[in-house]
Image (cartoon, rainbow, N blue to C red; front, top):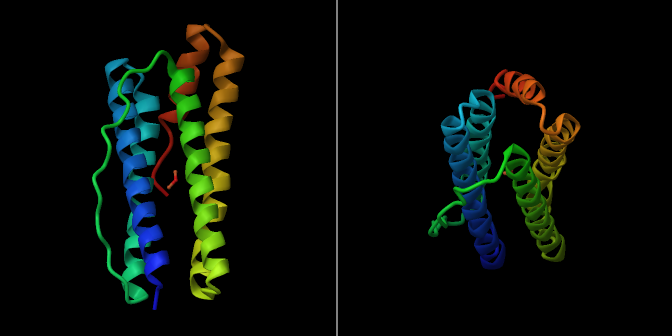
Length: 164
Ligand code: FEO
């Protein structure tokens, strides 16, 4: 059975994952408005992934005899300066999620909860991927600079992203 401390910490993580989903949906809306359909697609896939991350935790809490309590989701950021600005916010956000997962893991270590340690390993690996994905797009955007053609090519590439 999950300790109350771990249960509360996972509930907060569920909120962070759902808040992440909402941020990415807001970014998808922004890109739709900017006629950058590829970026919008990438953000929608990301939105779905975040809801899956939340639901994986949700299921785990009940598998371990705990309870889920949902908290309010903050209003997401909706104004952005450029695609590069958006992707820098994504990277910063993912770094915050990584730190939060690491804290959960530290708590599971402290409590000698081996099942939760094992469960969290998937998220630790996933965060490596999440940060890399954002960094790759930032690098492409920085290489392109203000060139419209480059932005269109990146948009086309991001349009190919499909849900796993
Ligand atoms: Fe679920 Fe993007 O972290």
